Image (cartoon, rainbow, N blue to C red; front, side):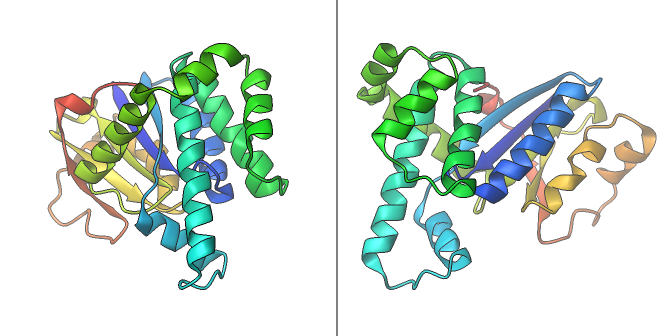
Length: 218
């Protein structure tokens, strides 16, 4: 069995591209893959987005607005997750498409429209969105990210249990994520890759200890 955790910006175009490629691989792979898509929001990732968009780092108003929108979108996704992981995944990807690719503004009207588009129950969504449970679920995701050493998005952690190792592999950045199909193979070459000391020495690839409490799916 293989487990993949993908940490993303719920409003980011770069993350959307990574999600599309990875989800296509998950759907077409012959391997049994459990996939979890997790919004990642903290001041470090917000700063990185500001740098990418050439927003002055001392622009407090822009920083606060970006954080508020990204955090709110993450809570939207967690609320919809209570109606099913498929709906939450589709919601995140459609939100990214509208905001990052089509230039839409993040607002409640757009959120409710997308909830409807993915087949969500609006009344249930609005009730869940106001609940403390959603904030708790979001915080659990951030705790998982911190424990795994996630500092940027997109990032992925892959556990391939067929290779008999007690650690996962963290890949940081869209370019590094291209290695995921190779990490999911169960051949002798792949087995050796993860048992050769010094192989995972690149800045964007490193080991992540296995923790059974992370074994849950979005």
